[in-house]
Length: 304
Image (cartoon, rainbow, N blue to C red):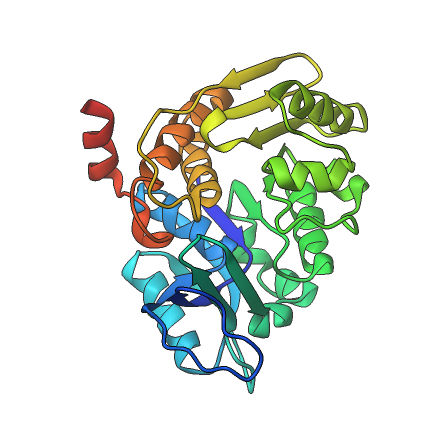
């Protein structure tokens, strides 16, 4: 089954320092790196590293970061036929400052991501119709997300929607047309406007979404695992216990592995279990896409 990831591409510019400068102050950073990111790109890379057949639909800038993003997709054997270069537009950028305490501050410039339009969905109709699963997030315009959902329903294509970053503007009617709705705890809390400090509260919040028409709600809960809630059942899939180094991008790792496994097996709980294991491995490594294992590394981790 071919998977279409329709979403964002960013470049993360990360600086590490002891503390944030005061107004007008200049401080030397303790470390710096630039890395490919964006929720859509992260999920596509994770799935592709595991062997999934992935086509990426996104918009990149006509600058050096856009070119770097293209090379990153190419290096991971992702179909780039639907990668659009937005003219006279910068690539999406996340400027991230991390203090020694772990506190971070992030500035986002959506850049080219805002140029991915419903017209692009229509234009790519022939290629998208060949896919069996769409993977969507909320870092591109909502109308583009809605266009993708409508297209999928018209062509009997399954849809996974990761409502990240969470937005109360998200149409529940559109979300209910998706086969899988996969928020993390924070996103779930924002969407239902209730606390989700315990697994019981997560379950209650997810059930409230199912009662409004969602089919399969899968909540990722970090070290507490993931929770599947449907009208018929509630299942907790525990996470592996590991020594975490960096949890950045773990949710995207989960989704990438989930869609890779589900595309091959159609087994929801089995896909969740494997995805939890893959996400656990990712947090033992620094970075986002660099922390994602390929199929060989993942198999060795499971056999250890």
